[in-house]
Image (cartoon, rainbow, N blue to C red):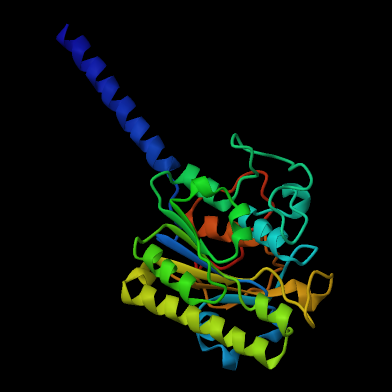
Length: 303
């Protein structure tokens, strides 16, 4: 009887150890030990207008991380369609958003999850890392229709078309040390539409965007987060004259910069589309992307 007890107990311990091993193996883990990804998005920041000497903070990210000025938007090169594309890791033909101000799919999505959405980066992270903190701050209300806000702990819309309101709310969120934070500035798009892409006023607004990128980087450094954080910077489209949306490179090419822990230094030489951005974020955090995504992680990890 005693022998039988020890056999059963030993079996139970083996089963428990096996279960623990499986859980440990299945738990997502960053390949480089990154704990936080901070995504800074700037609307209408065209790559064709970049002068690195006028953008010292983005230049710092470039010189100490991975970068390209040839990330392409999808067509039409307009706002909601491209922010949605960047947040869901697949082109518009799959997610169904087709217009600059889309609030719902104009064509049926090729796949939806149990909540009726094409899965976005917030939902994928919430499902893979249920205890993680996920936040978004933005000052164009159209962004709120581009992701599943219920997957985020905080999704804060700020009524301030410039920078300070978004910046202040972003610092509040960063102080909670989120796993993933999305920070959206609506400039320089507004200046492009009112005064023109490539004008002195537009170029000055690029410098203003750079200033706030620098403030965010400084805050991350001061609170010790940069030791295990990756920051990346993207835009949705460029433009010309006072508009955008066409199939031409000054409308379609945007900067893509990835900077921080475990990121290698140098230009991203492979073909890069904007739906690669969330795939890169997931790869940095060690999370598998959904089958319906079409983005590929950029070759940025210093393995």
